Image (cartoon, rainbow, N blue to C red; front, side, top):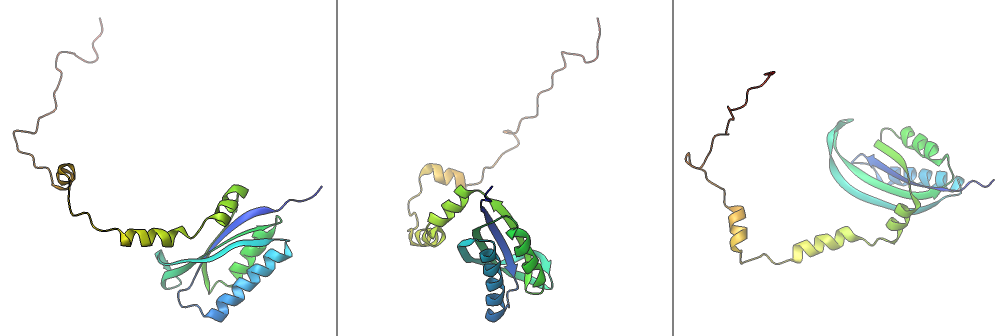
Length: 162
């Protein structure tokens, strides 16, 4: 019985001040592990440099990298073993098994984030506001006369038996 490869996604966060040589060494180890499990890398990208939700190893920011690949089962444990070995450079990591459809979608997907940023910055500001837009942006004011107290029903008694 032939073992079929699975699709995986690994997200790892590096220190913001990581040296290029150290990052290249880590990425080469990951690539070697995938190749050793008869795999291929579908996508490997630097995702973003972002602030962390909490401080990790005295770092408030981290650089997020995403790696999508196809390989034989067992590669996830090896990838995570290598990432945990570099615990001073890699702040956090996670490897998930994904569906083939999700991997194919990423493979054929163009760089949409850059396109969206360009579209947003090129869009001219709306000079005319419709009356509905003005009503949505103006705060509503209430007077004491317009606020009604909740109605109470005193006709029915609770807990009564006949």
